[in-house]
Amino acid sequence: MENHADNAGAITAGKALLGNADAKATPEEARKWIAIMSAVAAKHGPRMAHDVKVQTAEALSTMTNLKEVALQAAKTAEASLTDKSTTEDRVRVMKALLPALKMNAKTEEAKNAEAQLAKLETVLDKEYVIKVPPFKPEMFAGRKDKTDRKVVFELFTGAQCPPPASPPMWPLTRCPNRISRLN
Image (cartoon, rainbow, N blue to C red):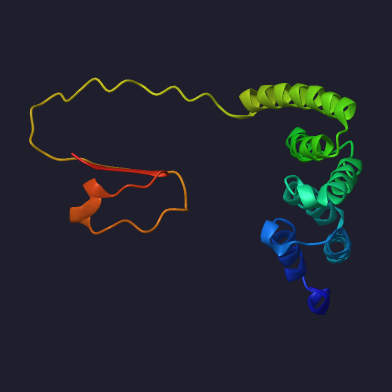
């Protein structure tokens, strides 16, 4: 990372290294990587700098060998919240802060963070109901005429699935994020 400290790719590399338990990073290495990531992000503005702080805290939230660094990163992300921060952003930060507090045996702070997170999620749910229009599907009344035509229905809900098989294999295609059916 040190060789590419002026490149935005350092952010991606840093997140990958911090979130990888097999990397076995020392706290000193982790702090050095975070400093490089923060410096690169700062060049791209305050929004990017904040987002990198949150992503760093999220990446470290389960790293027990770096629990002090995780807590420091989560507190830094929390401190970077502003009055203009969205509820979604606040929830992300609290979800990264909570495990860091628990790993560091900060029981009282963790209880406060859990209570704050519960309030934020309630607000987030209310905002969601206001922003997203209601979706009320109508029940299918059935076919009006008798016919022997087939219908192909395919619902895509994710990009993580491999490409579908050839058409004769569609009824056998299985993917957790896609429903394929031939009737």
